[in-house]
Image (tube, rainbow, N blue to C red; front, side, top):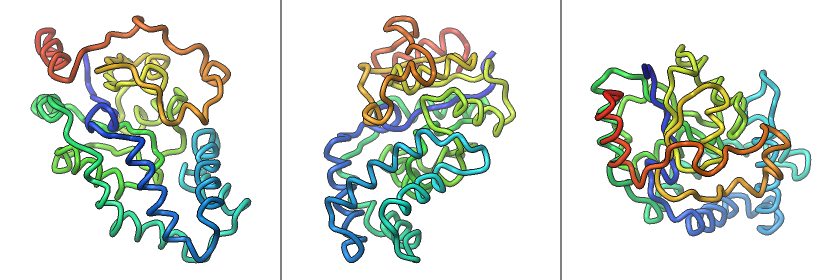
Length: 250
């Protein structure tokens, strides 16, 4: 029996051109700090500090705190740095909407879960604050839905693909891992939920995660990645929903 649904965002709920999105995202955010650091140096440090976010294992430190601490050690930030970040996400980030569009069938799947009164979690890699994730949910056409939890950088302490990320979600929503279904598109990042006992369903083609460059060999951290074919993969969200309805899961 499934008692909670976890759903990835990029490539699952949101059809996004991630390369174009990241190029414009980095350029826009860098412009907010043009008076503090040369653009190339700022962008290099921004990407470098993502490593600290992914590998944070301090249960008392959020992913956002890990990022800010690591960034400031290498490239001191102004006192109003957090205000600048937040202002960017509120005023500039929405301009990137042209890079994203709703994933066909995604809303229908979510609505089926809500109709069953299941708690639904936006289980996206917590690299962004909630404001940015909610904006991308708007691009996906699902921002009006009552999600139980959004795994933003302000609240999460672990990242994908660490199993502890999924265990933290299960604890927050009060549902045992084996009663959760994780839906995503990437074998390594989303498939690692299976290591906690969660059920996993993958949709679309298997993509190489943007964060792969920061992981090294995933096996060094979480064990060997699930082998291709070991987890069910569906052509799209509509095919997944049809199968879940057939099996009376949704």
